[in-house]
Length: 424
Image (cartoon, rainbow, N blue to C red; front, top):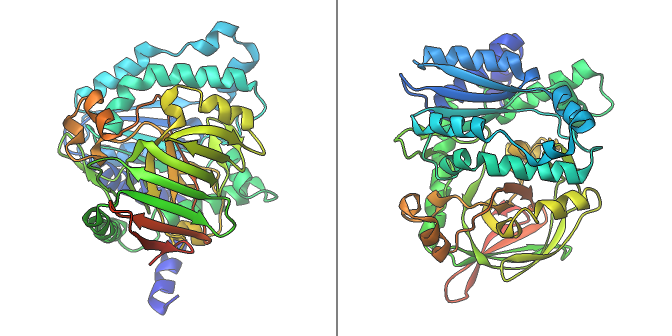
């Protein structure tokens, strides 16, 4: 670390937590959302994230928001459902609420989600009930989710340190220390521990865009992932007319936004029928309050035909049984092992962070904006190009310091893209 960098770090450390939260909130609104004057904001957050939610609300109104509406989730109330609710509850979700949210998006509202729920909240609950509840929620949320996956609105996700999450990330630490450590990790990964976070995000976005332009110019037909130990040997065919993305996007409403805070990825749409081989996860997956560890699957003709895990295997198999598209890929992303999140050495147990520490794939719904003209296509037109459709979109990490990636041209010629997790 240079002397100048050390000074910046010291200045940030001297700020109060309230001041640091304000910086993160400013980045969420100005960089993540690109919120415009007169625009409405619909936000979701866990109850424990209230201090950050309030700061984001303040920053949104300073940016000219018409109205900020926040939907809060409460972990004890969620657990009460699994303990006391009638069985029919787990096949129900309030479609009226999700339709209302979708109507808000159609009317011009932006969307912001604060991540931070307990990753292991439902680990001890009946996996059948968890699966049923997730399917019901996915079906009810489809109208709103389609507007997000098509990037018709400006949206973003940021994170808040919460006690149960912090204790999982830093086991053995006293709760207050664990929370403080997690906050500092979030601030660093979210690039707010600098003198001018907004300017730093602009520079970071430009660096990602250069990598995206390189990948789009190559027009690879497929990617080949191969690990040193042979546990991953996977060929991922790319959708016809695919587009790489990363470093922000212009939504269908014309607003430039950064969907994930933080982000280190370049991603595109795989072809749903052209994925073959075996792949093993390099990090655990936290999904809807359940922990899935050491995922190992085999693809044939784009479809998972075998799936195993050392923990949470039942949850994994129920997840990929959500619908036919749940067994196919909707995203493939390249992330170098020298990304700041990977170099932190922290396992966050949260996809928002862990996916930016390693190259990854996502089961389920594809992003139509990762296809040339895809945002204007029907579902049938997207499917003809190879884009997958599903109720789910679940990322899991496959990259590591031992992963090689080749780009495969249309004529079958291979050239190195990554060696030992680093860009060639």
